Amino acid sequence: MKHIMMIMALCAASCVSPEAHRALQRKNEVLAIENDELRQGMRDLAARAERLEAENQDLGARAADAEWIKQQKKKIGDLLARYGESSPTKVQGVELVPTTEGYAFRVAGGVLFEPGQNTLSDGGKRTLKELVESLQGRRLRVEGHTDDTPIVRSRWGTNLRLSVERAMSVADYLIASGIPQQQVSVAGYGEFRPAVEGSTEEARKTNRRVEILMLER
Image (tube, rainbow, N blue to C red):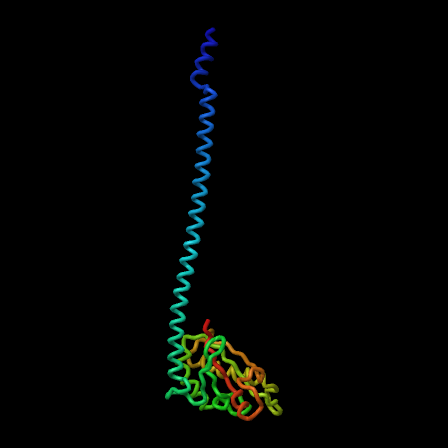
């Protein structure tokens, strides 16, 4: 009898009625749902924060691009004012021409080199010296071009080789004049990218050139 009374006392202290148990289960279920909703809310907030950060970076990049475009327009305006066709300070034998990659100084081959040579003439050096200041701080590609007259007696063998050698000579001069070497690249196209079509002497004279392209990016 004593043992039965002890069991009943323990049950009264620790046992839960079915109704109370079901109520506790419902409460736990509600808490679990609220916990899941809270975790989902935190994930949504994190995703929103990432989107806002991406939008902020995009706006910053656009603002930087707008400022860069503004600066480039000013630089091009200054160049056109200094070297444009109607400019009183236009350098003889030099044109400022637009390309798909940026503006380029087109320098007549006859200004830079003697026929069939890749050594800069004194006049060529003077011409390039006048351009160096405007080329500072820019990425450049120096492109050599020739006319379509085949090489017959020359150590270069082909117009393509001559165009590369001439571009190298101009690039070397620019680097020696203070343009950082890592900002200068070189290309040679021989007769394959004429500035004008035709085989007249005037067309060939125009096509014999070196172009110093100021890359926009």
